[in-house]
Image 1 (cartoon, rainbow, N blue to C red):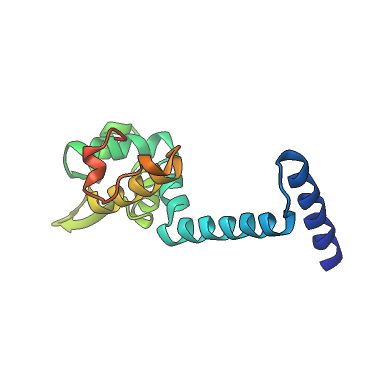
Image 2: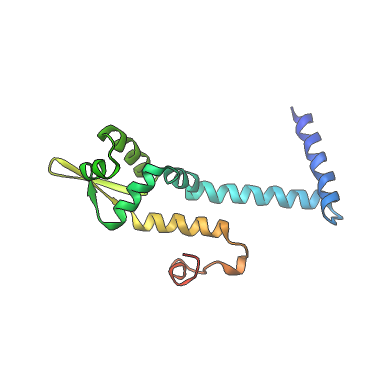
Amino acid sequence: MLDIKSNREDEIRIMLCNCRDITNANGYFIELLQLGESLREIILQNKLPTFLNALSNNERLIIFSSLKEKDRCVCELEAILNKSQSSISHHLKILEEAGVIKGWKKGKFTYYGIENDVVKMHLATFIKFLALKKDSLPKRNGDLEKSNLL
Protein backbone atom coordinates (compact mmCIF):
# COMPACT_ATOMS: atom_id res chain seq x y z
CA MET A 1 0.00 0.00 0.00
CA LEU A 2 2.81 2.40 0.87
CA ASP A 3 4.38 1.66 -2.52
CA ILE A 4 1.17 2.65 -4.33
CA LYS A 5 0.98 5.91 -2.36
CA SER A 6 4.64 6.62 -3.11
CA ASN A 7 4.11 5.98 -6.83
CA ARG A 8 1.09 8.31 -6.88
CA GLU A 9 3.07 11.04 -5.12
CA ASP A 10 5.83 10.69 -7.71
CA GLU A 11 3.25 10.99 -10.51
CA ILE A 12 1.86 14.15 -8.93
CA ARG A 13 5.33 15.67 -8.60
CA ILE A 14 6.01 15.02 -12.30
CA MET A 15 2.64 16.56 -13.27
CA LEU A 16 3.40 19.62 -11.12
CA CYS A 17 6.67 20.16 -12.97
CA ASN A 18 4.85 19.97 -16.32
CA CYS A 19 2.01 22.33 -15.44
CA ARG A 20 4.10 25.02 -13.72
CA ASP A 21 7.67 26.27 -13.93
CA ILE A 22 8.74 24.55 -10.75
CA THR A 23 12.35 23.90 -9.91
CA ASN A 24 11.68 22.21 -6.57
CA ALA A 25 8.79 19.78 -7.11
CA ASN A 26 9.29 18.13 -3.72
CA GLY A 27 9.08 21.44 -1.88
CA TYR A 28 6.04 22.57 -3.85
CA PHE A 29 4.33 19.20 -3.34
CA ILE A 30 4.86 19.51 0.43
CA GLU A 31 3.46 23.07 0.35
CA LEU A 32 0.35 21.80 -1.43
CA LEU A 33 -0.08 18.94 1.04
CA GLN A 34 0.15 21.42 3.92
CA LEU A 35 -2.39 23.71 2.24
CA GLY A 36 -4.80 20.79 1.87
CA GLU A 37 -4.40 19.80 5.52
CA SER A 38 -4.87 23.40 6.65
CA LEU A 39 -8.07 23.80 4.62
CA ARG A 40 -9.44 20.47 5.88
CA GLU A 41 -8.73 21.51 9.46
CA ILE A 42 -10.48 24.87 9.03
CA ILE A 43 -13.49 23.23 7.43
CA LEU A 44 -13.77 20.59 10.15
CA GLN A 45 -13.31 23.10 12.98
CA ASN A 46 -16.10 25.27 11.62
CA LYS A 47 -18.40 22.36 10.74
CA LEU A 48 -18.97 23.98 7.38
CA PRO A 49 -20.05 20.80 5.54
CA THR A 50 -22.72 20.12 8.18
CA PHE A 51 -24.02 23.68 7.84
CA LEU A 52 -24.09 23.57 4.04
CA ASN A 53 -25.71 20.14 4.01
CA ALA A 54 -28.42 21.37 6.37
CA LEU A 55 -29.35 24.12 3.91
CA SER A 56 -29.01 21.98 0.78
CA ASN A 57 -32.63 20.86 0.71
CA ASN A 58 -35.65 22.76 -0.64
CA GLU A 59 -37.85 22.06 2.39
CA ARG A 60 -35.12 23.13 4.81
CA LEU A 61 -34.53 26.31 2.82
CA ILE A 62 -38.23 27.09 3.01
CA ILE A 63 -38.18 26.45 6.77
CA PHE A 64 -35.14 28.69 7.15
CA SER A 65 -36.72 31.46 5.05
CA SER A 66 -39.97 31.32 7.00
CA LEU A 67 -38.05 31.53 10.29
CA LYS A 68 -36.28 34.69 9.09
CA GLU A 69 -39.59 36.52 9.48
CA LYS A 70 -40.32 35.26 13.00
CA ASP A 71 -40.06 32.26 15.32
CA ARG A 72 -42.64 29.63 14.45
CA CYS A 73 -44.21 26.55 15.96
CA VAL A 74 -44.17 23.21 14.18
CA CYS A 75 -47.85 23.47 13.22
CA GLU A 76 -47.12 26.74 11.35
CA LEU A 77 -44.29 25.05 9.47
CA GLU A 78 -46.62 22.15 8.61
CA ALA A 79 -49.02 24.64 6.99
CA ILE A 80 -46.24 26.51 5.18
CA LEU A 81 -44.77 23.33 3.69
CA ASN A 82 -48.03 21.39 3.49
CA LYS A 83 -46.14 18.38 4.88
CA SER A 84 -46.70 16.01 7.77
CA GLN A 85 -45.42 16.68 11.27
CA SER A 86 -42.98 13.76 10.98
CA SER A 87 -41.52 15.18 7.76
CA ILE A 88 -41.16 18.64 9.31
CA SER A 89 -39.54 17.15 12.43
CA HIS A 90 -37.00 15.31 10.30
CA HIS A 91 -35.93 18.56 8.62
CA LEU A 92 -35.97 20.50 11.89
CA LYS A 93 -33.69 17.91 13.48
CA ILE A 94 -31.11 18.32 10.69
CA LEU A 95 -31.23 22.11 10.95
CA GLU A 96 -30.98 21.98 14.74
CA GLU A 97 -28.06 19.52 14.74
CA ALA A 98 -26.21 21.87 12.38
CA GLY A 99 -26.82 24.75 14.80
CA VAL A 100 -28.85 26.70 12.24
CA ILE A 101 -31.99 26.79 14.40
CA LYS A 102 -32.94 26.23 18.02
CA GLY A 103 -36.16 24.81 19.39
CA TRP A 104 -37.88 25.38 22.73
CA LYS A 105 -41.10 24.27 24.37
CA LYS A 106 -43.85 26.78 25.05
CA GLY A 107 -46.76 24.99 26.63
CA LYS A 108 -47.78 22.09 24.41
CA PHE A 109 -46.01 23.50 21.36
CA THR A 110 -42.41 23.55 20.20
CA TYR A 111 -41.19 26.74 18.60
CA TYR A 112 -38.12 27.24 16.43
CA GLY A 113 -35.98 30.23 15.64
CA ILE A 114 -32.78 30.95 13.73
CA GLU A 115 -29.48 31.00 15.60
CA ASN A 116 -28.24 34.22 14.01
CA ASP A 117 -24.71 34.19 15.45
CA VAL A 118 -24.08 30.63 14.30
CA VAL A 119 -25.47 31.30 10.82
CA LYS A 120 -23.38 34.48 10.47
CA MET A 121 -20.23 32.61 11.55
CA HIS A 122 -20.82 29.84 9.00
CA LEU A 123 -21.62 32.33 6.25
CA ALA A 124 -18.46 34.29 7.00
CA THR A 125 -16.40 31.09 6.82
CA PHE A 126 -18.10 30.08 3.57
CA ILE A 127 -17.51 33.50 2.03
CA LYS A 128 -13.83 33.27 2.97
CA PHE A 129 -13.61 30.03 1.05
CA LEU A 130 -15.35 31.60 -1.93
CA ALA A 131 -13.30 34.81 -1.93
CA LEU A 132 -11.16 35.18 -5.01
CA LYS A 133 -8.44 37.25 -3.39
CA LYS A 134 -7.12 37.34 0.13
CA ASP A 135 -7.39 41.14 0.08
CA SER A 136 -11.17 40.99 -0.49
CA LEU A 137 -11.84 39.23 2.83
CA PRO A 138 -13.33 41.24 5.70
CA LYS A 139 -10.77 41.76 8.48
CA ARG A 140 -13.25 41.30 11.34
CA ASN A 141 -16.67 39.66 11.71
CA GLY A 142 -18.39 43.08 11.92
CA ASP A 143 -16.85 44.04 8.60
CA LEU A 144 -18.84 41.30 6.87
CA GLU A 145 -22.07 43.30 6.98
CA LYS A 146 -20.22 46.42 5.74
CA SER A 147 -18.59 44.59 2.84
CA ASN A 148 -20.27 43.97 -0.48
CA LEU A 149 -20.00 40.23 0.04
CA LEU A 150 -23.48 39.83 1.55
